[in-house]
Length: 482
Image (cartoon, rainbow, N blue to C red):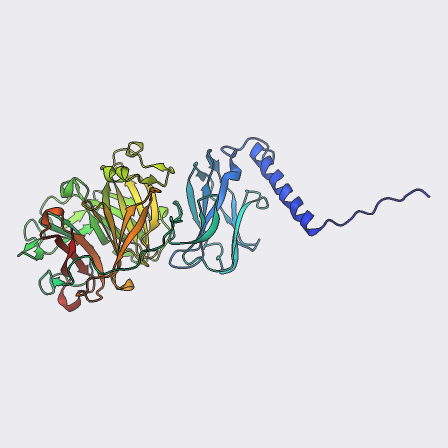
């Protein structure tokens, strides 16, 4: 008898998985060539370079998935789909969304689905079935699941949430062991009784003037009061502080931090605000510039850089707490790396921006972000890194020591971290200090260092502002080694 038709064999599970991967790769190649769309797809030549790069599943930041373009061509990701482990859950990326080479883009998916403690983040092409990349985990991010290095490495629990920027992968060595305060142990009050009340926050000393931001929407100009204290300036309408407004004269900025550029207050006073007090349940993460001339009792912002859409979502009262400015020359001299380009920071890439970078600290994530704030009102994030603290309440650049101070309040026992640019071009913690022995565990949200001109006998003054006004005093003075 002639042989009958052969009975097809059932493919093994391994073969089925290999076949599925081959079909997905074929579909992706057809997409890149335009075969699934009937023609070329703009900027899709490097579609396979898009990677899930960071995932946040818990904490003060909404559930989010970050994508990174590890390639050399811009990729249009319009209509691509993000999913968790449930095919019924999906987030569609908005039309017009592209990722430049080396770029990062974070998507808050919490409105569509939640990311659980044992879950996965998957990225699909616009057809919803062609898998581009995925990450699976069996425990919450605490705080972030991050690829190290970006785009190519394995996922690990990183030190900080850096959505929209390079991951905080670290260079080894861990966080230094805390040591005693590097100055005198004694702390004294530096203001009169009940001058400011509660909510005094950010500080910045400019020679014989101390600038202070208050959460209630005030900016104070303080002058010397004897050898060791400060009091409100009574000239030009400053005696009770000046009320702050957003551009146009509306709202009540929740001022948390204050800083100046190299031009001093003549170049404007810059305030970090986390929300509008008139809409206190909504985040508004902004840097506001105020021209401080005149004698009126109100200051209306000359400019606002609203960073809300560029930063991970946080609680309305867990946003920007600290701000400081670092000159371009200090950054280029230290070999600082621009996270937006992946190359050495080059100030000439950017339009007029005051000659430096503003760094802001976030209470809810403990992260620090660096921004070039253009005079035109545009901005570019050039850094995102961990402050090494549960929350960053204050930032101060100390030019004499070329170090960045990150300060926490009673949330973490008044710890202070100092950071410097490391060999990889990123800021990393180099020292951790306990608060001075004579300082109670106050709710200190502001910190400022005197300049080198006040260094006497190897130490110089430093000041803290206590948001709670404990004992009727909001300002305290100590010393730090020069």
